[in-house]
Every structure is written in C-alpha cells, then in structure tokens.
Image (cartoon, rainbow, N blue to C red; front, top):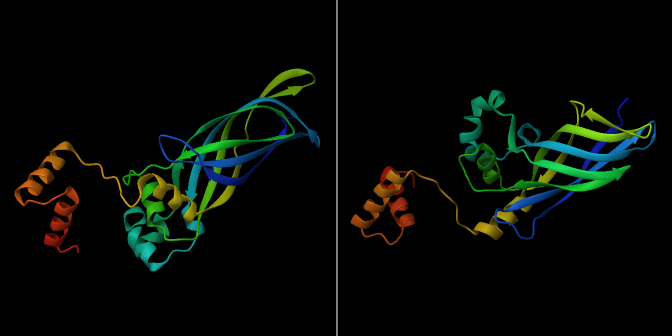
Length: 215
C-alpha cells in the first residue's frame, strides 16, 4: 500500500515582493504509513485552486454584480458552481512525517476572467476555496525508492477572508482598475476624447456612459 497523505491550509499571507500581486497559502502535508511517519523523498503537486461559490450567501448587491458570472436570479440554481482560480505547480522537497510549503496564487486584474469578476463583486465575508491535488509521490519502501500517484480524492478546503484579497489589490492597484481593449477601440475612444476636449480617457468613458443612460 502507498502511504496515506493528509492536507490542510494553515494560513495565508501576501508575497512581500512580486511583479504580480500574489497570495501565498500555507499548505501542511502529512504522510503516514501503518500509523508511523513515512519518509518522503519528493512530491510534485499540480494544484487546482477552485472557488466553491455555492458555499456562501450573497447580498442583493453582490448578486447584482455577479450577473455576468452566474446570470440572472432565475439562472442561479443551475448557473452557480465552482470557478477555477489558479493551477499552480508546487515541488515539495523531501520530509519525514509532515512539512509545510507555500501554494502561490496570482491575483491579477483581468476582469474577463470569471474568478476575478467574482472576487471583485464581493463586499465582505469569506471566499470558500477548494484545493485539489494531483501528482506523484516518491517515498521509501523497504529501503528502496517507490513512486505512487496521488488518489483522486486528495483535497482540502479553506475560507479566505475577502478583506485579505481586497487589501492586496489595493496595495498594488489602489482605486484603479485595469481594462483591456483592442487597439481599434482605444483609437476610437482617443479620437472621441480629443474631439470633445476631455482631459483623460476616464472622462471620455464617463461621458459615453451618461449618453447611454447607464449613469
């Protein structure tokens, strides 16, 4: 039999210096064989970090902001489900019994991603997360090296405070949000801005929103 693995997220913090804002989830990995600490030579983890959106409640304002993710209120029953946030690969060095490693999750601002739109829509509370693991375990058996695939049910859960994600986003981006548009769309916006003597692209966008009746 292969050793028995256990998983737990014990905490989270922000990576101190990184080109992209990144949260580091502290993962505790345990490994036992016949009730005793097993010797692990190495462990390669492919991690699927998923937002288990159905496992929390939402205010009326949050539901309104999440229409682009889960649809209208009548569509929520069938539309709400897990959202893939990240797929990091983590290489765990050798250990005996248990160890802890960081699972990095980049927190970009691309609102075209469902996970970013979801997180941006939340006002407070927690984000229910599911960490699913796959990969290969290299361990000692009878003094020799053995390999085993991780079982399909290798996973753990964690509830990330929304405020943690908000503080990280604020530290990197302030109150500004990044919007990606095609070059031709940008040129049309720039032309509109110049023709109407607006001081910034934001003023031009605000004008267009007023003309459309959106504000």
